[in-house]
Amino acid sequence: MGGRRTAAEEARVEAEAIKLEGGLLVELYERHASDAGRLAYLLTGDRELAEDLVQDAFVKLTGRFVHHRDPGGLHAYLRVTVVNLARSHHRRKAVERRFAERQPLAEPTTAAFDASDRDVLQQALLSLPLRQRTAIVLRYYEDLDVAQTASTMHCSEGTVKALTSRGIARLRPLIGDVSHDG
Image (cartoon, rainbow, N blue to C red; front, side, top):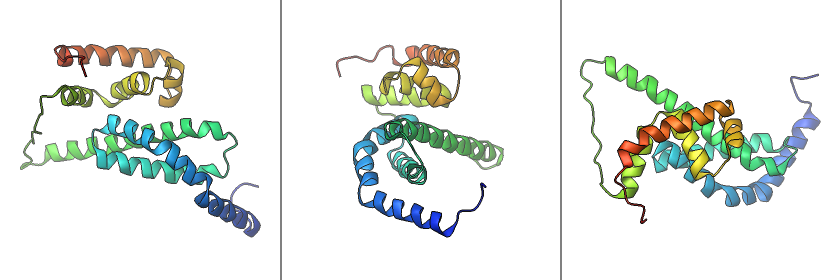
């Protein structure tokens, strides 16, 4: 029967959680947090938000870890969780923006723009719609192939190809004069 756990099951889950806190979970965090943080930063453009998303992803991972059968799949699960959390954040922000636009005293804000290559690239990336940005970050930063990107984004491979192509087409005019020297 699904639904509620027995006291014995609750005790086992709690014992596993304690074991995780002392060992495996800490090891997983140390191994994967920086990669997850970079992914979250590239998706959001905000370091503090990226840190929050990574912490939320590890909280979700902790709940799933006890029942996860394939420890090798945890990195992929973490990546998908970070992408989904970033997507949820952007959806909430879009709703907030639409609400603010309807308010009579709302004034648009302009962010200071630094002209360094890194900042130009970051601004250009952040100008893309979230799905295009996610496809490009997963393909070129995370170095995932089309199938892995499609799996992470829960879409078809054709959608990944289209999103990537459109995103690159939108980036070219914005970063065409950026040097590649580094």
